Image (cartoon, rainbow, N blue to C red; front, side, top):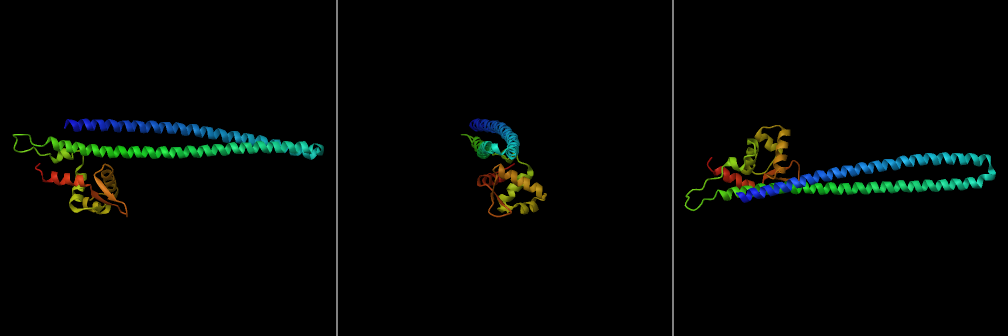
Length: 236
């Protein structure tokens, strides 16, 4: 029992660490996005100002070309120079857009990694629960000289579940896989309440589901089914 509690504490600490790291990285990503957005806005504003200035310069050069044909060659040179500046500015904006797209790709990768961490944490919590249950069963084994072991009571094994959740698990263990609408008819709850209930039991590791067709079919995991059958036969 003490080993199970120590393992539970260790895994809980790991889970807390993952959660803190998740929010720390999320804050860092948000700050990076804000900086990137500010830089991108500055590039666009600079481009707009420079473009306006260049356009005004082009208009001035064109006017001078019309009234002074002798200076037309010089005016054309200036126009070409301004065109080169405009092209250079367009290249800068294109580079800024490329950097922005690369940043978005990196953010998507980081988001995926964070989702993987959250999934690992959830799987770890399920394993901790199973280890705790095994520890309770081990602590309940009879010692030498004791004829009858103290049974693990149903309330201790499944204490954190509600009566409705227990009823759903027992029904699925006894009757086999069912869809959410079928379960709704059995437990007499609303569609929304039933959907939330099944989602919770699935995410906490009590159920498996067949998502090959809609509506999904839910079934009790083998370990939980054995626990339910065992606790159901024990005296209260």
